[in-house]
Every structure is written in C-alpha cells, then in structure tokens.
Picture 1 (cartoon, rainbow, N blue to C red):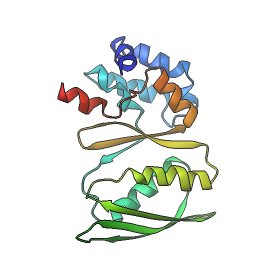
Picture 2 (cartoon, helix red, strand yellow):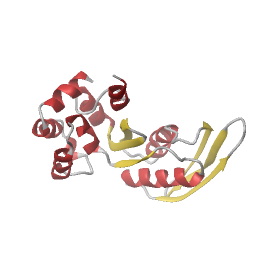
Picture 3 (cartoon, rainbow, N blue to C red):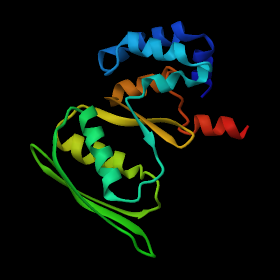
Length: 185
C-alpha cells in the first residue's frame, strides 16, 4: 500500500510512465491516452488505479441468475471469448441460496455451482472464470479485481505476470480493501 501511495503522490505523469515502463499498454484494452484522460479526471490521486478498470458494476442485488449471467457475458467479452449460452438456476432456501448451471463456449461447456450466496456478487465467479473457463479455453490473461470503492467492484483483464508486476511496482495497491481501509482510519 505504501508503494502505491508513494507513486500516486508523484502525480498523473509518474503513474502513466510507470504503467508504460512495465508494458501495461501492450496488454490493456485501454490506450495510454484513455487511461491518462481518466487519471486526469480524478481529484484524488488515490483513485488512479480505478482508471485501469475494464469492468465495473454494483456488487449489490445479485438475487437471480440473470445478474450472474450478465457478468459472465461481460467477463467473457473482456477475455475475447464468445459464450454461446449461459443457463443458470438460482434457488432460494432458508439454509443457503445456491446458483448452479452451465456456461457454454464455442469449444466446451463448464459447470458451476455456488452455495451460501447472500445477495451480493460472489467473488467465486471470478475464480470460476479464471480457473475453469479461461484456463479451459487456453486464454493467457486472467480477470483480477481492483480495490473496491463503495459497493462497486472493479476488474481488469491482463496476463497474471503483468498484474503481479503492477502490484510489485506500486501501480495497484496490494490491499484489496485499500479504499475501505482508508475510510476506517
């Protein structure tokens, strides 16, 4: 967290240069101009990491299969995968809500099963996409969450090594609760 705080304190140009230095723009779906324009919009330098977001949504209100299906389609689009169908069954129960179903691509089908859902986005969906679908489809990149702000969740799709390099170089806070932790202080 200290590396990120130190880097963003240097301003937008230093942040953009550090992204370029690690090769971020060779893999990002956003150009250097798009990210630079977004970074310049932030009044608080601590928000620079949010300019990297390629997918963002309100994590509250996941109480049916439709919300999860939309996110699955959005994540697949980020990864350049075409989903041919998503068939999900969301069941409410006194013990635990469950989500089961099949995600089908042009190449294969993947079974998912989540239990103990609570009406918020379940981060296991990211693990499912990375470990099952993207791995099964032979996709190099992975979906990573950026620090959440308020109840919104943010994601980026890049190769694992690049994401790790971004964290090591202070471009992405190590603490997934970076913004939440800052509010508690």
